[in-house]
Length: 394
Image 1 (cartoon, one colour):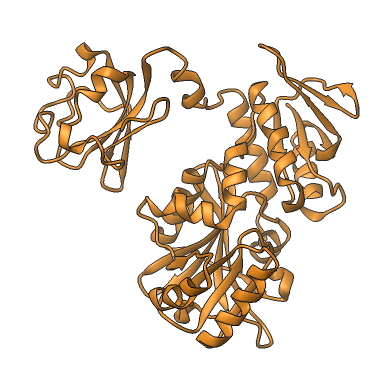
Image 2 (cartoon, rainbow, N blue to C red):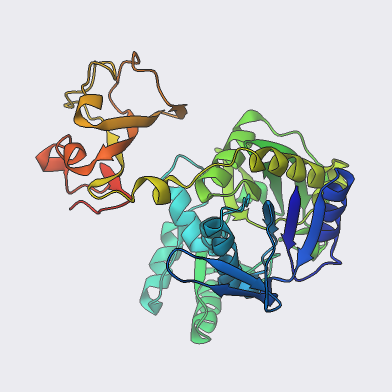
């Protein structure tokens, strides 16, 4: 396998470990500076150049995109995607996870524990927002801070108000987040590769510091996660479109609370504390994916006129409830059920004999007009009922 690591820091621990792990497995590896790429697009021919020379073929890339080059870096990753080069972290996944508010918005529509968070712009909305998230103390975060930078704890409402006003005066976007007292000064980092957590550590702040990041002097120790934390970490990474991710969670009274999904998680802290070969797990996963990569159904299935991908939610009055997929007549309407979501369970390619129940959500590909007709007239305006990736239904 010919592998490229997109990194501006070839000597940093994470880049070195990924290269060593790949070479130890007999793969050809190059570290390529993200900013040395040139992107060219024309009809039917996406191209990439490196240092002004045509880029040779690669089987896969590992993006290590720094926060300062997010826009250009994700454009480079997107170009590799158009060239059908495998990446464990999609361009959309990197962009979504880098913006803390956008990431929380995406996760919030799923059954994933999150600390109560508010985002406001007007000065008069600050105090009501602090009250809604539970009052002081509160955590104030910059939208694009990393490694604990731009994270402040305010002990009182007055202090919070002053901090937010100061940050907003410098054109900074900030989040107001509930302080999870039972997890004060500590958090969990779960390292997800594919569909499993390959390593996990608990980080604990030191010396009166409330931020537990290793870069801020936090101490890390290996931890064996219970199933709820493992499931939350994997689901969060998958929702964000990341096959390699560091999922940071607080240990709340009601279970895991996801703070952040990191698209370029560092390896030094997790390997040092767990003594596990996390870099090797990443390479092994990529090796398996290169021979049989996943496809982006949004690009592949929605190119035909009048066809698209839709999610149908079955309410109590749905005519499909109580029928099997075969009996429902969906196939006769040119509709194929790709996935069935039932509660927390995801059933891919469900058998035609499976009986449909109230609350089931069917991810379907087929004729948009046929799928529109399955939505009761009085519910068509509810955005939670149908989500069409090709055409918005009002």
